[in-house]
Every structure is written in C-alpha cells, then in structure tokens.
Figure 1 (cartoon, rainbow, N blue to C red):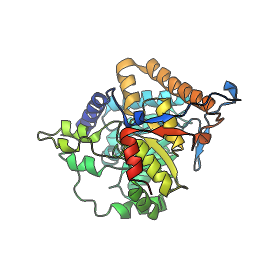
Figure 2: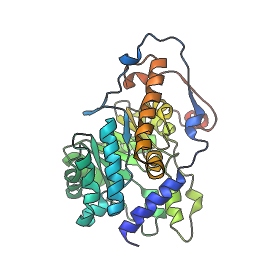
Figure 3: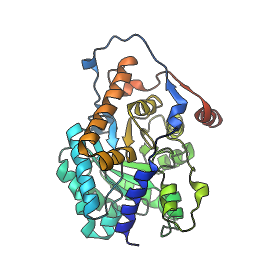
Figure 4: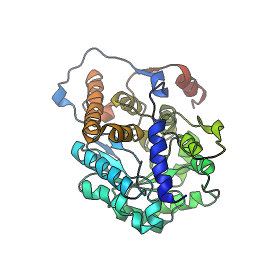
Length: 341
C-alpha cells in the first residue's frame, strides 16, 4: 500500500473512531462559583505559550496531509477556518512530503490559506535535523511538533521497528531548530517519567495528547488482517497526563489534546495546568460530515463555552484558570491517587 493510500485510510478510520460516549473528561467536574465581578467584554482569549502568542488557547491539532489532492482540500479548509477564527493549526506528519516532494502542496496550502496565522510543522521522531528544518520551511512554521507514536508503529503492518536513535535525534533537533519544538504523543499520553526524560533532552514544550480522542491503536488495527485489539484502550487519559506532567515539570510549556470535545473539556485541561488545548478528530468529523459553516460554528461554540467558564470562575484570561477548584471521581480519581508524587 502506498503512503498516500495509508494517509487516506487514517482519515477514514479516524472519523469513524470519534464516536460520542463516556469520556475520562466526564470524571472531572469544575466547581461552580455563583458570584463574579466581570463583564463579558472583560474576558479575552489571547494567551502565550512560551514565545508563541496565540489569539486563543484552542488550536487545530495535527491530522492531515500527504494524501494528494484530497488531503490538500481538507487542509485548505482547516487552514481557512483557522484564519477566520484566529486559532493556531498544526499540519499532519510531513514525512510523506519529505520523502516525496509531489506531496508538498497538501501542506504548503496551509500557509497559503492562513498567511498570518500560527502554524506548527509536524515530523516523526525518525527525522533528521535536515528533515526537521525542511518541514519548518515547507509551511513557514512558527513551531515544530515531533510526534511520538511507538505503539502506532508497532501495530501498523508496515511500521518502524527500530527506535535506537530516537533520543539522539530529538535532542539534535531541539538544539538545532530555531523555532520552538513541541514533543507530542499521538493519543496514548505522556507519562511523568517520559516528560522528565524529554526535559533531559532539552525539550521545553510538551503536548500530552492522551487517550480519549482519535485512537491510532484502533485505526491501525482496522488496517490489519490480524488485529492486536488488546491495545485498543492502551494509554494515559489526557487529564491524567496533564496533571502528571505539571506536577513534575512546573516550568514546562504544556499543551493538552486527545479527546477534547468542547470548551468545557478545554477549560478542565487549563485548570490542571495546560496552557493551550488542541482539537483534531472532532473538528475533522464536523468538517467532513457537515461542511465549512458548521466547522466555523463549532469553533465559535468552543470559544463561547470557554468564555462562559472564565466568567463563572472570574478569569479575565485563560492562564487564570490554572488551579481553580475541581472534583474528580471514578477512573480518573483512581489514576490521580495512585500516580501522585
């Protein structure tokens, strides 16, 4: 199977895997506050993550690219939506274009459609410094994501099996690339042990990208003749990952993604210490099934939901949500308790 065909299968199965139902986010409740002294106009969504100035803590996380004209069209629409709503966006893995320059248009379209926006380039941990710089240049990126997807590769029929130089490559990229380097998971979460290890390599920006959203174990199992379904629910819930990382790395620049469905889920991640939050599969599903206008409306709704919570908790800006009162129950509480420092 060609890489292009594989990318299109990933999109198909990712959309199918984003179904409504129970989420680990449902095990956390924000404690309601009844008195506020703010006006709606007082609330701003502008925030900073390290040196990145964002119009909103919401960003479109990595999804597509490398699937020819079909993914070029999807990326064009996502980028146009990001431009119209003022949110950041990451492209999907650029390895296909690094290996086959004919795939570059499916990524370059993002900067063309959003010339002034915040855009993240995206590569795998198998990339060299030279490939990392090419990926940044391809989309004129403001930051670079390195995705960690060992489990996905192991389940993927044609996936990598040799990770001996992963540490060395990540460290070299962090030391050499002039834009911020964000290391992220692809849906299985970053543990506190992994976060500390990455810090030792010089990584300052992390995206928890936990269990609960697009499940690449299930996606790759859909592509196998002999599914390894024992790994379909493997991983760390996003909120658990965020809490673990923030407790051991209080100075890290922390993003949250993986199963965030709305502004309430986004606010929960900010309360636990994330500085921004990404949505991917749920936005792609809206775009593919309902169209561009619905996607714009969905992004506006996420912003409205977030601002309502900020009003209730008397927060003028997103960073003030950190540490606001909350209650956890069930599965998430068990995780918090057993993994406490």
